[in-house]
Length: 127
Length: 127
Image 1: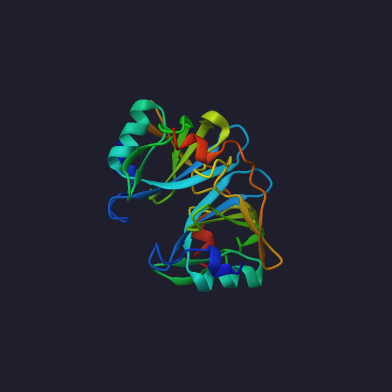
Image 2: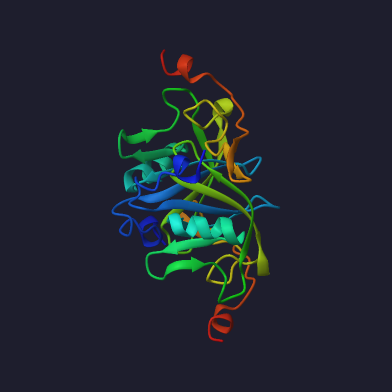
């Protein structure tokens, strides 16, 4: 079956949810969106290309160097979410410089933060 | 900080993306949505409660018995996605009876299916 027989871009007005998971550790790195073009670019380039409402087509990591090599691409039962198993180059997925975007956890009615700081965003994004 | 100082329900018109991950294996089980009420119920009950556009407040697994015990709740850098690390009761998260909703993978321009069938949905949902 072709790409568009399975992926349902209609339900989300042209977008699907895209999750990046570290292929080696299973850690969830980030969640973003894809449109059809970004999915095609992802398949063509072998690197994660998302769709951002603010910046448009977004080849993840082109500025910071922290690109994501896609080792496996999956979709869910109703085709409105994509799971990418990736090798995270540079070791950090988050624009904060942390390894994963999911660095905040809820415990005893407060939020904790156990994020692993990999780079300093002030240095990386001010080049 | 309080729940609503961190979770941004506004951007998604009252909804955030919610990802369920098997706490033991790291496998991504499913993706759904939460509104504020479903997040509060999740925290109160310790079980995943989602928001479905078709069925409203959705205490996952109440019909099939495949509830999700929440062991850890995280949010991402911009607070519009929630990650639940869960114990999947009954061993299956998907309405198809498979363990994970992400049973389809893309390889060589075709879709494969390596889903693990845990229950027969015709039997479970026709009780």
